[in-house]
Length: 373
Image 1 (cartoon, rainbow, N blue to C red):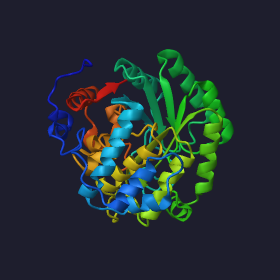
Image 2 (image 1 turned 180 degrees about the vertical axis):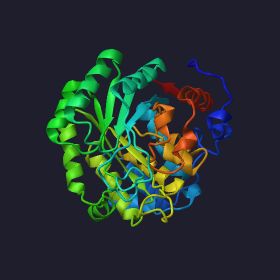
Image 3 (image 1 turned 90 degrees about the vertical axis):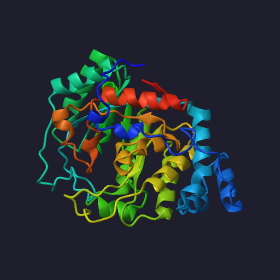
Image 4 (image 1 turned 90 degrees about the horizontal axis):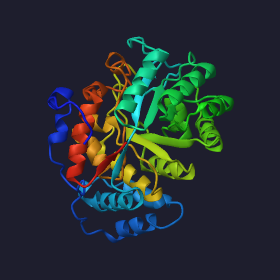
């Protein structure tokens, strides 16, 4: 057991984890009897080769959680078989909330004049990295908006300093950059890069990200792979204009990219965006996509995202029972954490990360899962 504070879990905003899980190996009940069509789809998905689009659409169209239990059970079994029972930790530090983009769904969009902006100093970022190291977590995720203030020279100096001082594996999530900058980051010591494609629909992508093209995003992902980064992609679920066919294409795209990681979470409307009046995504479709990605890319790393716990008090544990195997505690200093306002509700998970990890570890141990720093 990691050494952490024993303060009240409720004081850290995580009392929801105390509730028993409703199902599955973490734990799923035994799968119900399959319909012949669903059974055929599942059997084909577990075979070698790219997934059939019609199979993905058929399963994504199901809205009955009981009917989807066999899928979740199969994904959880595949996760156990391929990546084991460990939950990998990635300590995240969100060092700037400035962004030059105007994505319709994001609270960090440039046009949001209500948001107080910040940039952490190099010393503050390094201190946060030391905190990750002291927590016995081996991977640091450095994330920001697309902030041109941090040019390649600044970022390479930072990467080199963190690598030299901590020896941590470094994941970057900084958005689209020129190829030569990605190459410089790699040479400076960065190991992984997360660049979510958000949606596989070119028209939806262009509409939600004005001035951007999906083609450019995919080009960047190709560069990252070529340069030797472990590369992550991923998408939002529940976007306006999204349907089962688009989500099926998201899964196929993650497969075709040979993604090492995929961040998949629900759309949550932010009040300071043009999509503020749109309904949020739902838990069940996210779990379905996590399960399908696990079956189509068995060894991929899939985080259980914070956004899931905003939708449901046990959302992240449900994700871990449906194929996910990564947890990303937030080590951004508290003074800045609430300002990284991607979507409403993130501040509910603003407790001490070590206390959160302690409670998570206890809960996971009850279901035969363990934490791997």
